[in-house]
Length: 245
Image 1 (tube, rainbow, N blue to C red):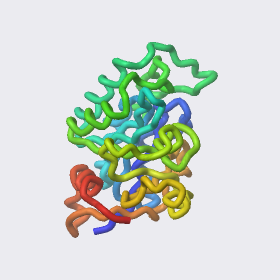
Image 2: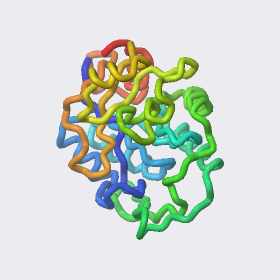
Image 3: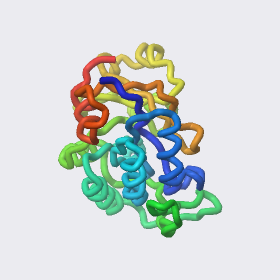
Image 4: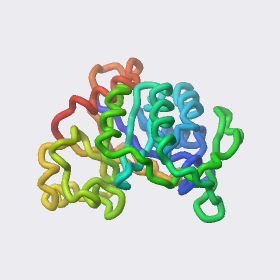
């Protein structure tokens, strides 16, 4: 079964995202566009995931708990977890190694926490646009131990991507899928980076505005033939096992 997905979306908790990217608005837009699975992946934070999960359940959409982790090497990773508890465990580990700097909303943007009714629930005071002390190797190991999957984020971009920082996919890293932006020329990227050979590629929006969420164009092959039985583990299994694109 092939389902339309967008597995890299930011909520209003990310300082670079619009304030109207609330859980309710994100899920409503995903439903309007016909997506079957999404992941909200805020920078170094999971505070809006419970509200996303509640709104997604009501809309019949699978919401995979996630985070966009910035490693010590300043590489961005989309980390997808099987449960909210696993996501918050990762958040605790990441926050333990981040500088304790206050956010400056006038410069970086607000970091809004929102409940399941899209009502304000506070603001994250700590600056989320900061690298963690966790290395990329440690990040892969920790997410795996939590039952999750790591996708190097926006590897086609000139900043904070695995390829732009390291130049290639290191052979010792257990990299399967990689994530690229919606308009990436994947063939050109593969020609420029032979280390991508044989690795499946997933497009995602990295949306910071509601209108940027993907149209139903990126399809993920998942097990089964009943959309009503699909869940978070169904999506994660597909990202572990799918071999070719």
